[in-house]
Image 1: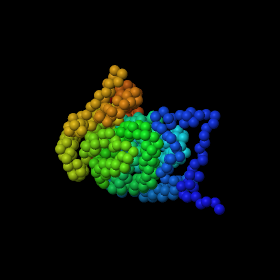
Image 2: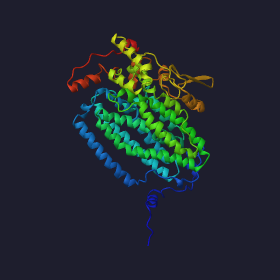
Image 3: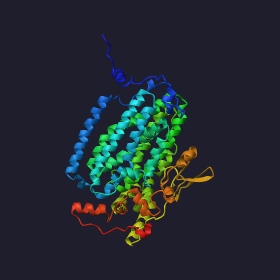
Length: 513
C-alpha cells in the first residue's frame, strides 16, 4: 500500500523537479550572478516557500479576485461614483500613485522575473515567478482603476513617460534603479525586505484607508485585491532574510549592510507618501507620525527583537527617521508648494480646518515651525504675490530630493542639512548622514546618478526654459498650479453644479522663462 504523503511532500512534488544540474556548462556560468555579491548558499533545499501555492491554485485564486475587483470597478464607473469624493483635491493622491507607484510595480515585475532566472534554487525561482506575475497584475489593476479618473481630471494621462523624466519622480525611480542595478540577493533584500516587509504598510495603508475616508471605493477595492499578494511578498522578504542568515555566518554583515542602505533609501522615498497622507487628503485617517509609530517603531521593533537571534540589528539611522516623523511631511510639502508650477498636481495651502488637524497631530512642531510660514504664504497670495520658486534646487546625490530637510538629529529644525563628500577631485552633496554614508560606500555608483536638475542645466530635458522642460515631461499647462482656480476644481464644481472659484495665481510666461 502506497504511503500517504503530507501536504508539504505533495507540494514539493508539484513545484520541485523542474530544475536540473547543468552538464555542458558549469553551474557558475549558468547562474553567474549568484556568487559575485559574496553571499554563500550551502543548501537550496532548506528554502521554505512563504505560501505553498501551485500554479493551478494560484491562477484560480487570482482569477476569483479579479472577477470581484472588475465588477466593483464597472459599477463605480457606471454610477459616476467619483462624484461621491469628499473633494476633488483628493485626486492629487491618485496622481501621485499612478505617476510614482504603478511604474514601480511594473519595474518589480520585470526584476522578479530576472531573479527567477538568476537564482538556482527551485523554491526561490517559483516564489520570484509568482511575485513577478503579482506585480504585473498590480500595475494593470491600478491603471484600470485610475483610468476612470483620467476622464475627468488632469495629471494622469502619461504616467510611464513622466516616470522616466519628471524631477520628483526621479526619487522613486532612482530607488528602484539602485536596487535593479545591484545583484540578485541585494535586490530581493532591498525590495522584499527593506521595502515590502519593513515599510510597505506605510505606503499602502495610507493610500487605501485615505481612499476609504474620501469616498473612493474603487481604489479601496484594488488595494484590498492586492493586499493578500502583499502579505505573501512580505513573507517572502522575511523568508529570504532568514534563509540567507541561516545558510552561512559570513552572510550576516553583507545582509546588515544592505538593510541599512535600503531602509534609508526607502524611507526617503516615503517622504512623498508622508506629504500625501498629511496634505493631499481632505479627510485624513491618521497622520504620518501616527503611521510611523504603529508600522515602523512598534512593528519593526518587534521584528528586529525576533531577528536578533541571528545577530541582525535595527537599520542604521532608524532613530533619526523616527525623530524626523514630526517634520518630514511638512518639509516635503513646502518643497512642492514652491515648485507646484512644475509638478502635475493642483495643490494649495491647507485649509484652516486642516491646519488645526495638523496642530493636533503635531503639537510639538506644527504651530511652532510650519504654521507661521503657511500663514505668510497665504498673505502673499492674497496680495497677488503668490510665491513660486523659479530657480532650480540643489538635489541630494543619493535620494535626489531637493535639499529641504533640516538638522533634526542635531536639534536645529530650522537649519538646512548639507553633507559633502569628495570623490576623484569633485564634491558631491547629500541631504543627511544616511545618504552620505550610502554615497561614501559606493561613490563610483552614485556619481553616475541621473539628476534632473543637472540634466536640465546640461540641456538634456527639452530646453533651457521651464515651458520647454514641462513640454518634455508631457505636462499640459493646466496640470500644475494651485487647486483653487484650477481646471480640476472647475470641472468638479461643474459636475457638482456649483459655481467655479476665481482664477488662482499662476506664474507668468515671463517668470517661467
